[in-house]
Image (tube, rainbow, N blue to C red; front, side, top):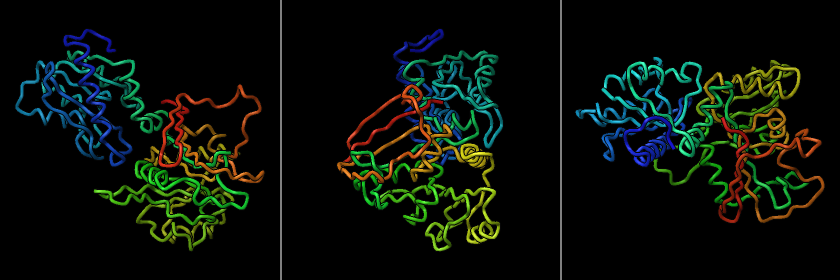
Amino acid sequence: MLSGEVPTSVATDERHLARAIELAGLGGVRISPNPRVGAVIAAGEETLGEGYHQELGGPHAEVEAIRAAAGLDLSNATLYVSLEPCCHQGRTPPCTDAIREAGIRRVVVASDDPSEHASGRGLGILRDEGVEVVIADGELAARARLLNQPFRKHARTGRPWVLFKSAMSLDGKVATRSGDSKWISGEESRHRAHQWRAACDAVVVGIGTAVADDPLLTARLPGAETEVHQPRRVVFDSLARLPLTAKLLDDAPAIPLTVVVSRAAPRAATDVLETHGAEVIVATGGNEPARLRSALDQMGGAGVTSILLEGGPKLAGAFLDAGEIDEIRLFIAPLVLGGRNARDPLESEGVEQIADAVRALTLICERVGEDLLISARIREW
């Protein structure tokens, strides 16, 4: 439902706003660290123009919609937008100026912008200019917020949104007692994981995984019609032990590689990694959670808003202990590994009481090939 005085029908408003949210979803990782935004301009049932934010530094959704409606009288039209219009000069001029200059007198907004330079300011400016502002609530507002979880967390905390992905057996193991893990999940599940890599700013592993698997950590999508976005590869490696023969270094810095070390890392080792194209950042703090948050602060400061955390179990457990996992996606394969020393997906300190357990806000199950995918949202921003 929508709140406020609405001259058009609620159903009409909801239809156009749903379309704006759908358009916002077309904006991919190319706009990061900006949010995904879609916009529709309509007069009653008739759509006059629509658009979405397509690339960083390009026109915002509102401007795209206004351009699509060029030459039309918009004084009796309504602008439907998935996120409150910006009011500051950034890479592009303020959208509030474009709305005012277009003569639009009514704006329906699906969700707020929690950024320090926004947070309702754009809506206030529009109201001061005599524009009627209607703010959505309920299911449409929730959809719009969920579309921009990485942006919203980054705006509020300065840290990236973290998606933890793992594949495990029916008995909850991610590797055998000897450490073998290839392949627990099926081919379709692995393809889905590569799609997630392409949709995130960075993919993160620990040094144990980097040494044991010697991965590329690139997004590989056979048959993709357009060039696939390659995420930044990040290795948490406190003592700078990443071998110089690692595949990760073969294509650095063309595909960015960041190695996160502690103050205990030998300077000679970090210098050699930098010589081979890696960026080295030093995580500080008195304990592991503090050092992890320090690394995330630095990555967020460099514009990383979303992370796909792929393990291993110790690093994933550290993220859990630090309270920095926002969503979990687990592939469950039709396998039973057994073994008291086989690896668990999250090797953290954990909780002593069930009452203290992290509880998912939502739970979705789907079949992916021969596997079952469980997606659990832990936080909403």
